[in-house]
Amino acid sequence: MAKEKEKKGVVTGTPVSILWEGILLIPIFGILDSLRSRQVMEAILNKLLETGSKTIILDILGVEYVDTAVANRIVKITQATKLMGAECIISGVSPAIAQTIVELGVNLGNTSTMSTLRNALELAFEMNGLEVGRKEGSKKKGT
Image (cartoon, rainbow, N blue to C red; front, side, top):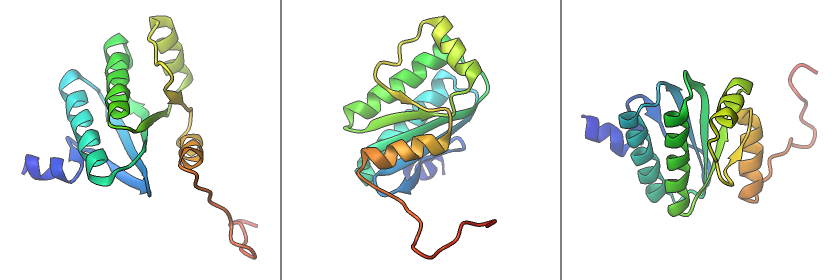
């Protein structure tokens, strides 16, 4: 059963979803220990191979705690995705996480980081040459 879930891109409750053509979304919640980070990395890499996606949004808004080990695990995930030919955008970077990463001296390299999923999605669209717009004549909700 666990192998079946891994093949579908879900490992230990961490979905790897196709957000848009060429763009994957991986929301991380809870604790990112070494076992879970390996499982997450494996699920991401398998989904990259399966879909040929070129951009990954790794949303860490739900990560409970960031220390040097967690930050380094995130860096390793981004490095592995780069080896597969994909760019990783880290979203959900709160002020506390940003401060912790800077204080720990963790180097994220040239990995793009965004505070919100919306900003990460906008960047992912830009990176993939995609554009989303409102249909002519349609109205915004609430107007």
